[in-house]
Image (cartoon, rainbow, N blue to C red):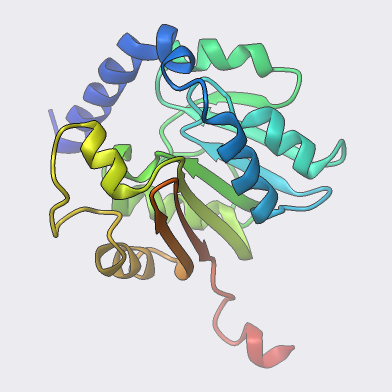
Length: 208
């Protein structure tokens, strides 16, 4: 089994075992999600992908942000999580898929919202490249967590290490190498939010 296939299997196993109690374990995250999505403001009519949507807690918030003319697609690798997200099927389409292999055309998405996504991508570089492929030039990727890196490490009983994927010196070049430009980075006790833009195609800026 390849490393990425093994990572996918571990991700499914980890989240599948926790899907039933996931929302009850984090009951106070809703207002923080709402604040982050309001700040991102995808806009009326936007096409938003919730990559790694889990139980779908962000889907109604994203639907409210894009309005009835917008499109919200929740994507997750774990069937048990997506089964929980089905409670929000009236607000979003749902897709069981690997974020590194999306059945979407090129350059159609306005915003990719990834809550807790980056640490669980089976092969972060491949996943980021695929998310860049489906995002239009000027579209954005938002990597989010309702607590910051230090608080998350403490929750898991470990210390932060220099190789943490979400540390800005590591994340910025990883994004740049895979189709994104980091434009904003916040790592506070009560929020992690890194926003990256899909750069215009070569020469596009000069043609404007």
